Figure 1 (tube, rainbow, N blue to C red):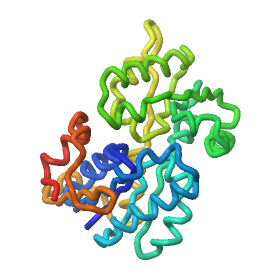
Figure 2: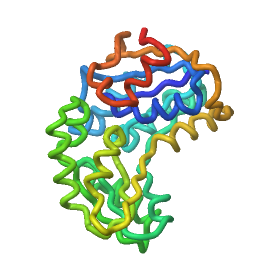
Figure 3: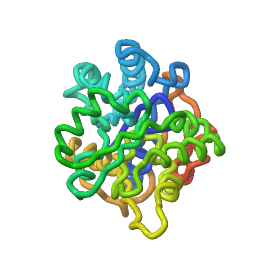
Figure 4: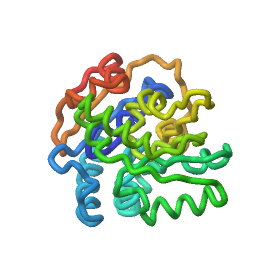
Length: 261
């Protein structure tokens, strides 16, 4: 079994780690785009072209499924990716966990990139899945970029700024960018209020990994022997995980179970 994941940078690590936990025996192909990152500021057409190139580099390794480990790429490029690769390779997008957050009740905060916050895409998800639920959209200026470069002081500053915009009575925080899941513990500490229940944090990685297995007709096997290989593609070239990936436990998990090729 071989599963590919794609993103402009290391935001795909959260979903990669989730796949590893569910199927440690799966061979993994991580396709990143250091030559074209960040994707967020690009036009939808340009972003789609970059995403298609990254996806096709992964597809050349003949995976059984491809996970788009990026909310922004899912918004703009998922239809084109599916048109290009399916049905031969199932393509699984990443959507913010607004539906389960709203179903839990209480006030919801959605932490997302400034480009996504207030977008038609996110507002559409809120209307569809959180109608009648109080939702606060929180723009996280610079957080994804800080996580990408493992810039500790910038991460702390960006999280503190977003936490200051988050209402005290929030019961669930949706992490609407895959990079944010790499610093989940720090976000949790920042939104915890003295004397109030700790908000629940919801990401997409676990659900996306499980959906990939379903699309492949496979079942979780967390006790399978950890024999899966790891291939890293950097704008189509085989390489190594970016050094910044090793700043996070999700990145450190990968070399422990299989060396990059």
